[in-house]
Image (cartoon, rainbow, N blue to C red; front, side, top):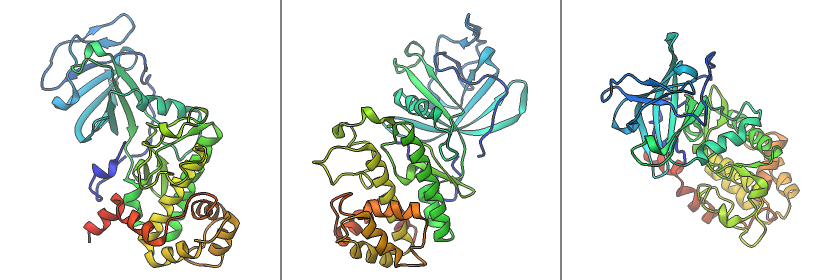
Length: 349
């Protein structure tokens, strides 16, 4: 899972504005030349297909590294400092510049993984034209014959944005700002679903916010919906605090699972803003059997719960009995208190 909140202090930025290049970008099927600033000064040999290659490719973890990539090696990606590492991927800061315009560099985040699913998820999203889905700057593969690990390795380059959603949750000035962000994220999920794609890992550490505009950033578990009907293949995907776990005996619905996780994310966020009011609503909707009944309850609570029709629908889905087996308010709060968001905010007091 791509968890930026574990990498950046809350005061730090995390991903800058998107940018574009005039030179060719990455070719997924090509192998770039990788040189290490403190290990190799060898002049690369020009390969037949126009890409640079080298007989040894040090791993980025050995120190600052550079990838020369693009047609005739026009673009240079400099990988700088590791941010975090897990069993499935490593995250780095970096920058990109073109050989003909070295004065203009662009900050990026580089995700390095031995799993091609990291790339395949982004390739699935290429036709989803939503401003709330981050677009990769590029990606490429280093073949197994040129890595120390002896297996193919993949690199994904993304723009550097300000902060994760869970960081934004703590510093958002008002409820309206949060609603705006959640509506954007919901819009992106609806766009994915309309293209037959399920996200499968909805949680606030997989979204970024910059200038009150939100973007989903992690699609390692995204799949075509028609391939997602087997719930046993999906149970381990989403963060456990947000997963659609209760209706285990019902057919798995990728649409409902994503929306359920969005609802849980919103309710948890509102608890941070007003714990007692949120739990009151949770209790008052315990006996609501339909979304309309929940919407009626929410509609009676102006001000704190005053929001758009779409957000009412979202809350209604996560709060009504026909969407899930309801937890008691006490169990729900206990579950929320186990989330990284709650632990982080309590730890910061």
